Length: 307
Ligand code: ATP
Ligand code: MN
Ligand code: MN
Image (tube, rainbow, N blue to C red; front, side, top):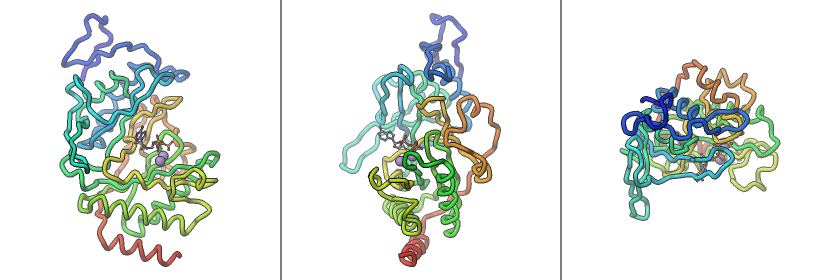
């Protein structure tokens, strides 16, 4: 990919290279990062982000005027979209088809940034077998006022409980307030099984520590607790892609960390755009496991034992 913004605007290429319009527009007030910084970020991070995007339908959070302006969450492909953003036709549960998007290249990332994209959100399954998820995500959403140390404790507790089921996981700092704990899945089970597993797992956490967790979305149930959001695990549900920027003050990044590193991290938005570019940590993502009936049964036994 070429970003040809050093050339005067009338010489910027259309086609192979991607010109960025309004390159100097400040996207992140305060931090001062411009639209060109965002485009260059995604160009530089392409090798790290693309393996996670790979073949997953993607939704875009676009803020064409920057953080101060309007934002819209775009799930469907639009007419006249650039080549780098592939169109995928998906037949939904009601039998109707809809056009979704997929990004496979650095060009696609940069083309999305040119359209004002800041955040990339991905499905939990890949386009060739949408009905079989390739990851399980627990999105930890702390009630307002809860400190990050509590969120970390929750992430470690989830890691340990998953480990009892021989399911290795990895943590993602959301770049917002929480942590996502992800388990890479072999694509054997369907959404029903994975969703059931996620639901039972969350309820087990709640049964063991009802003062610390809730598995229900309602804010009133959250009072001082962490919502273990298992609802990310459904066909068509999305979660923020690793290494995506977040459209929040300070240009934070959704950053994967090692479990060891997490011990020292003080906040979910510990890495900003600049820090992410400088970071050279190699994260060893664990191998995928399958959610077998045996694992579901063991989990149910654990829940029965805790009640
Ligand atoms: P935090 O740690 O602050 O909770 P997060 O990424 O977990 O950060 P949100 O930004 O609140 O949380 O997003 C929750 C989920 O809902 C995301 O995973 C995202 O993919 C999805 N989402 C966000 N906005 C929309 C939207 N407008 N329509 C549908 N889904 C959305
Ligand atoms: Mn969250
Ligand atoms: Mn959530």
